[in-house]
Length: 145
Image 1 (cartoon, rainbow, N blue to C red):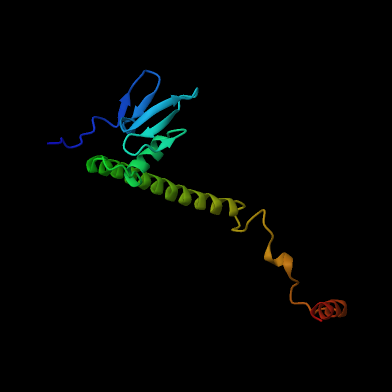
Image 2: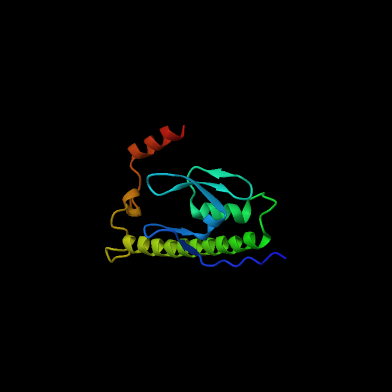
């Protein structure tokens, strides 16, 4: 009988210099690049990556791997992790959006009068309730025709 999948830890320490997440148990590390990144190859379907990024690798195992020998509990484990990562991204982006909107409003009303100090005032674009002179009327008529 096959044992159920029990992840030991979310992080595996392979050296004092670099930590590897548990996705690397299911992705074979191949060529090492000078910057500490690795090429990777899926243990279940032989898909390969020039630069294995853990988040992309987890998403692949969770959502796209076609290997028939991929255990369902491994896939579901990574589905949960990817869903958690996506939720954190959504929370972060919505928090940033709120902060950005607040800071934009603060910038617009900085001069204390509720008017944007660096934008044009609508009163700059029309004349007050004065009648048009004959030159203005002729100019408008020429543009219309």
